[in-house]
Image 1: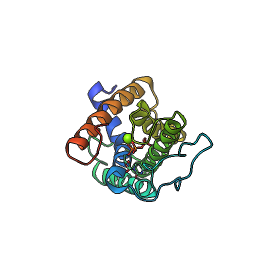
Image 2 (image 1 turned 45 degrees about the vertical axis):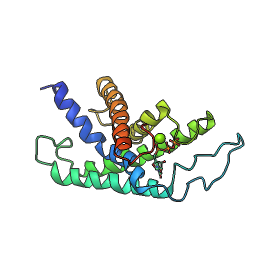
Image 3 (image 1 turned 135 degrees about the vertical axis):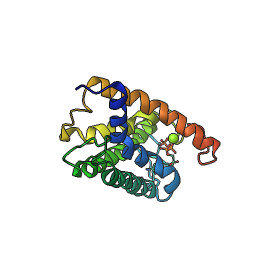
Image 4 (image 1 turned 30 degrees about the horizontal axis):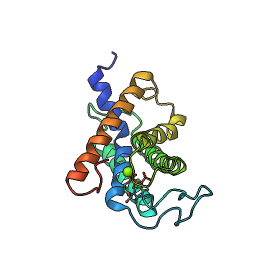
Length: 180
Ligand code: CTP
Ligand code: MG
């Protein structure tokens, strides 16, 4: 029986949740030891900038993996189990999507600096590069539920909206200086 839109949306959110956690945890856990060590590229901009740090990278990966471990413990056997007879996929997919999200975020900052956009200034790259990184890294797993047009459209639209909303609330709550 084909999935309803609602079921498909829930499955996709379960799939992408660890990457969301990995992408947002650095705001709380990061901020120390710039990955580019303060170095400047030939275009006289930082390679990545002060907003991309080792504490954010490792904190983000750790937090994202924690979300995967929780999913692997809580979901098998329930109606929300997206990997059926292969519960180890929660951890494999979690590791790949978290690493991919963090890598995509770094690639986004690299691109922002090359475009002359200051660290912390808003760009569409903030919302989407981490998602594309997460998807790219799990391409080898050939997950049929993810790599179809309707799923990709949903993930892009939902991620854009939730990222905007979450940053706005993080700003109101005093966790982020800027509302983006
Ligand atoms: N952060 C971090 N390490 C990372 C990613 C994020 O320490 N790898 C922390 C930084 O304190 C950063 C904050 O989380 O300022 C918000 O992250 P993000 O919005 O991704 O970075 P920006 O500061 O906006 O920098 P950029 O313009 O390069 O995206
Ligand atoms: Mg930002």
